[in-house]
Image 1: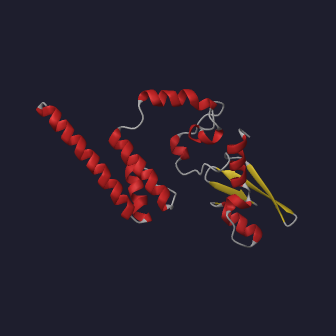
Image 2: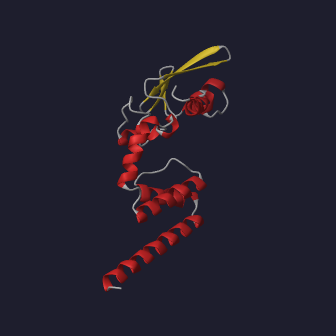
Image 3: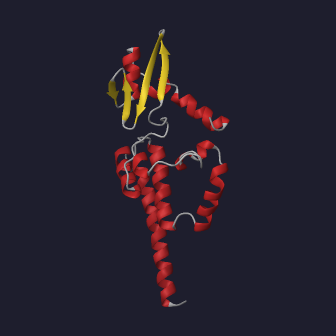
Length: 182
């Protein structure tokens, strides 16, 4: 075996050992440390505080960086098949060919469960209809701006609510994913 091949094989073994060490270190990290590691490997902060989710995403990214990710052929095949995929699989490309995907910097802080800006969410509670307009950077309810649907739901009901559940956005997302395009 030539010296060059021996050195390449040695580097490959060290890289694999380094990946294994990084993956093992993830298991010992706190949620805060995982959030920081997520920022390091993806370049963007995460909104998740779920330890298992963060662990899996970071492990995947570390391995992708070490192994090189998907081949050009695989990426081309995905692009070819994407227009026929179920909506829930296509959320990263804007929901299909008919809709133009938002710019990445616009999507960075936007929750994918939210409808497009300009959408009016309507909910009846105790005989009164409540209308909330989705904005680029929050929500408008009764002339006031809010950063959170949960705060609006709390104002309406007087108790703490998950805003997505109160305005039935979780159910809508589930129906779209299971029943095709809505």
